[in-house]
Image (cartoon, rainbow, N blue to C red; front, side, top):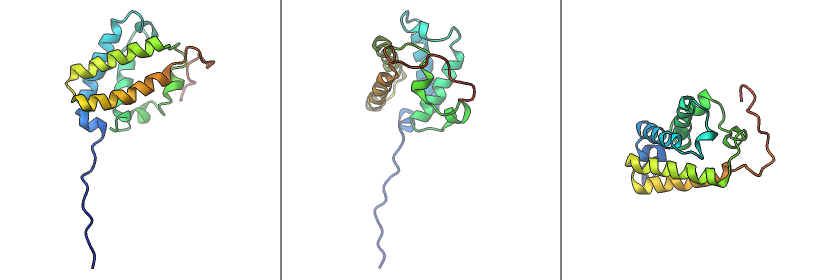
Length: 144
């Protein structure tokens, strides 16, 4: 006699729990407004922020469990390598996290969801620190 196993509800991704694409876009746009006004962090970014804003939206959506649009349009994330041209120290990582945390708070995302995502972003920001690393500082070759 066959028996039925209890059905488990599918788990939502962090992307779904925070509210999807519109919320990701709101967070990224708010984050970049904060970066624009940061005298320490702003010099790490190019003069025109628009391309970076769009890539950040794609990356964050994918990283949080949404569509893999970043990989489909830009390629494999390779985040640490993509950031080698920029000398990133602990202060930069801290300021980046401060602005991202503030953008999450301003978005109205549930505090427990924001805390879960920020915990993951904390580790990612530390991973980006490369100021004392002997790494290639040139940009990635085309197509990478």
